Image (cartoon, rainbow, N blue to C red; front, side, top):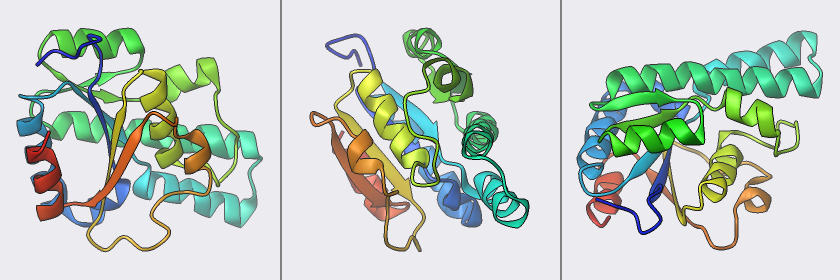
Length: 190
């Protein structure tokens, strides 16, 4: 289960929209835990209803781009706490060092990205940049070459945000899959 670089073989962004489908979320986490026995992986949370709350506040009373951006990243941290608690073997990680330590300990790191992203601030502050673009950037920053975006079964087009293709490094292969049987097939191929 060792990456040639000793790092992350696969980054999996678990969409926050799965919270509207609790059975799919639980099944997805079970499948991810099984895949982690074969592949060194990192979970990046979406924002889901946590970020939707920030969008609603921005729409209703107006926030600056910077405030909305950082609040939305903090929303990802909230979902990270939930995922780490529900994922067998899951543990919160806030930095690259913590990600490596979790993997070396046989755990599944779930990134709470606020601290790391606040330090490096790599992406524009806009609603065109969501957790999809953040996951793409994180995949590149970790020198991984595979990104899997897990969406809810009822996800609508567009499946990724407007900035995603800018954030995704050329060497990274990204796959978008719906939770359930399609996810199972992709993870079994890892």
